[in-house]
Length: 288
Image (cartoon, rainbow, N blue to C red; front, side, top):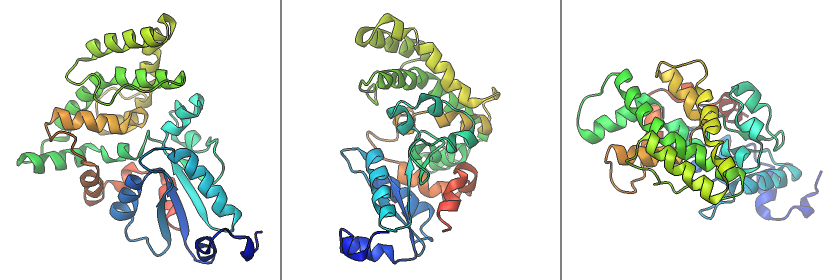
């Protein structure tokens, strides 16, 4: 155990003796969602901190900061987006559709938790939450859940080739497709364009893997084929949440480059679906 004089700063020394758990997240935006909108009543026992910044690197910094704190006797844990598994080429874990085995297969250590969803933004996409926001924005009453689901699945269907194509490019160490790529295009048009890009940037053989990747993403939906809310919440585990929000904003003409995440985050709690969408480990971490 490190002695007090060997601690690197007064901050480390102070936090070591505070009866509080420190939860490191990848970005300040994640902190705004969890600390200010979801668990703002837990500040006495849990503090959420951003390990990354606007320049990225959150995954590596979360791991490094947790290791540093634990070495100094501080109760610290980290939360990583599921796409950190893809970034580190842990493809078996990334495509593991069983939540229990996914959470138990973290290759980053016992104190690093991996989200069952692509990233925090995915947890903002419950159909009831999206519709509550849209109804207020458009000045109308709320629609039936099945009508909302139908529209969300239609958007997602056209988006699938972009998500799969970006995963393929990531697997070869290349940059993902731009967030706005494929807007206003159908599934077939996007599929053809993405396949052509992959063939050009990689090889014809890599392009042939696009359909396989799409099928693996679709498999997150399990045996569901009914476009129900359960089907939706299962399927979006393997979907790029930020990319979907870009498409959602565009589809409903909510304003160019508008950031609706914090509104959706507050509604997720206010609509009473937080417990339904979040991973079980969240509630363990906020009750040290």
